[in-house]
Image (tube, rainbow, N blue to C red; front, top):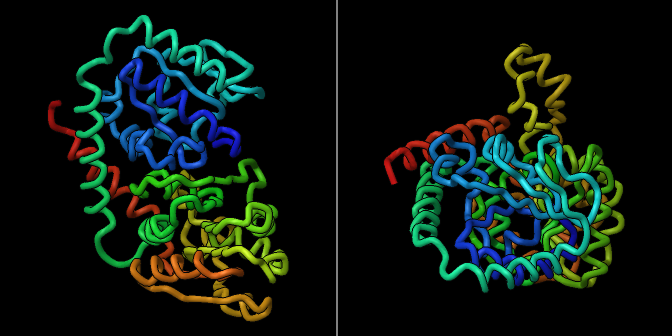
Length: 349
């Protein structure tokens, strides 16, 4: 993930990728994923979560731009490979095994690399377009398999984000929301993506979303979990009287469900897990909307979510769109998706 300034990286990254015939994998908050020009591999994080996908995306050298991607797939794929980090600052190496760091002007470095490679590399490898097409077709088919059936957290997030018009701002919540966008959203339009990354990334999320909508004066979709929303409900006061459209989309799965994907879920009994980790609150947010005088829509199907988000992003002021989804749907759909993708990539290529 990175700030809006990383939008300037798009053109030199495109030239660099073209010069080497490489594949770009970019997470949802990087400013390189939603560009409108299919710059990044769709579903790259998911591909890297499968053994066959990691083999197909073989690479002699990994160039990491800015912060390390959030997904576990990238960490598994990059392990043991030579990795060069080009960043403006900090120390973006959570795994502690980068081979080289280059700090400074990332955009300038990309421009210089692309220019040099364009002169020295006569033509990109022939296999890259075919490989990318093969991978993206497998991802699309696996999504269709995994998301079929009753409304789930991943399907709800996908429906909301894919209703975002070109040029809008997308504010992504921590934990499951940003990961769901990485895995399941296939539509690529030019968006400004804002994330609050960090140990306490849920603090002030509602306030930050309202501030961005007010400052940018553009339609803004904030996708956040129910715990994040409940944690910062008081900041809905800041969303009153907005001239620009702001939609809070809350897939309400009753607590902090990312903990279902951690080992603690397997060792605690259900009651202890729900009380101490998921912290199921039993809340609905229609009352919060009424308290602050905001529009509220409850959606129970993908089509209803798309319609509610699209309408909210066309009307000045704030709208809360809530979708109740099964508590374990993110974990169960995730398992089905990775299994389906692994099966579809299993054939020789």
